[in-house]
Image 1 (tube, rainbow, N blue to C red):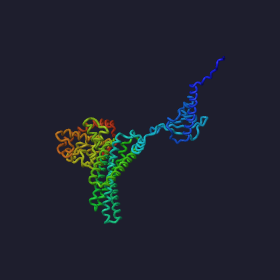
Image 2: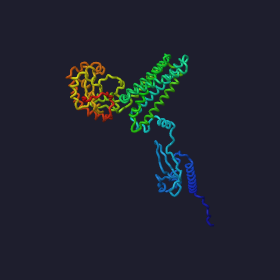
Image 3: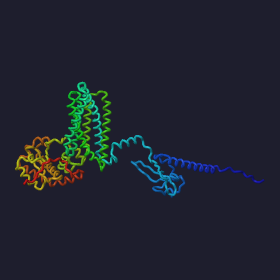
Image 4: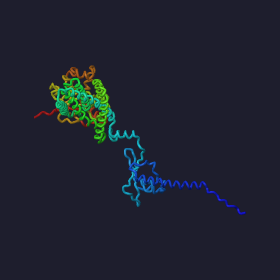
Length: 518
C-alpha cells in the first residue's frame, strides 16, 4: 500500500509575517500620500515635525537622503528640505517640491514649525515684553534700567490716579460759578488757564544748560512742582470764586514740571542705552509710563465713585508719587561728573585714595541741592570782585598759578573758596580748577580739627579759619603741591571706574580773566 501523502498545513508564522509586511507597506504608502497632500494644501504653519515621516521610511538610499541644497533630507520622494530658520528662539524648516531634473517647482516652498505650541501665558508675556522692554533686553540696556523703569511706572500710576481727582475738582469748581457766568466766560477762563501754563513753560525753558548740569536735581524739582500744582488745583474746591488765579498758578507749575521732565528724559535714556538703541529705549520707556498712567486712572475712577476724602486721598497719592520720583532719580546711573558727583568722587579720593564706582558715586550724590542755590562752599568761575576784595591777596597768590589757566583763593569775609578761570581755560582746566578747590577745602578742614566738620558749621562760621594773609598763602602753596601730585592719579582712577572725564558739566560761571588790555 503506497504511503499516503498528507497535505501539510501552511506555516502559520510565515503566513503571518508575510501578511504583516504587506499590510505595513500599504499603510506606509497611504501615510506618505496623506502627508504629501497635507503639505501641499496646508498654510505655512503645519503639523509638528513628529508627524513627518523620516527619510529612511521612504525607502530612499542614504546617499539620496544626504544630497541637496542645505541638508538634503526628504519627507517623501517629492519634498526636499532646503533651509532652516530661527526667529527669537523659534525654529522653522522650509521644504519644496522636487519637479525632476534637479529642479524645484516654483511657489512650492512650505514651512514647518519645529517648536511645540507655546503656552498662552507665554504668548501674552512675549507680547507685553515687545511693548515695554527694548529689543535684546537685558543685554541692550544697563543694569540700572529695571529699577528706574519700576519706579517710573509707580510714579505714573500715582500721577494718573491723582489726575482724576484734580480734573474732577476743577470741573466742579467751574460748575459752581456756572450760575453766575455764561458758558462762554467759562470757556474763556479755561483757555486763560491753559495759556498761563504755556507762558510759564516758555519762560522756564531759558534754563537751558542747567538741564544737563543738574539733571537729577531738576527732575526731582519738577516732580515737586507737579505735586504743588495738583495741590493748588484741589484748593479750588474750597474757594471756587478764585478758580481762575488758582488754576492759572497750578497750570504754570505743572507746565514747568512738564518742561523739566521732557528736557531730562533724553539724557536719562541715553545713560541706559547700549549702542545705538536710544530710540527703542525711549519708546519703550514712554510706553511703560502710559500703561501705568492708564492703570492709575482706572483705579482712581473706581475709587472716586465712593466719594473718598480729598485731603486723605491726595496725601496718600502724593506721598506715593514723591517717593517713587525720588527712587526713580536715585536709580539713574550717569557717567558724567556734575558738581554733586564730582564732589563725591574727589572727597572719596582724598580720604581713601580710591574713586567710587559709577554706582557708588550716583548713589552718594545729593539730589536735594537745588540748582538755583547760590551759596556753596566752592564757587567755580566767579567774578574777580567776588573772589578778591584785597588787592594784596591777589598779588600774593597770582605767581603760584602763573603756569595754570586758573587761580584758586579763599575769601574769609564770605567764607567761600573761589576758582577763577583764565580765558584760555579748557574743559580739563575747569576740572583741574574744581579739583584744586576741593583740595584746598580739604586742607582747611584738616588744619582746623578743633572746629566742627559739619557742612552747616562750615557754611555759617569761617571768620577764624584763615586769620592772616600768610596763612592763606601757605595753604594755597600746599594745595598746589598736592594737586601737582594727585590730579593725574585721580583722573586715571576715575577713568578706570568708567567716569567720563572729557566733558565738563560743572556749570562754571562765564567770567574769565584776561591779560591787561592795551
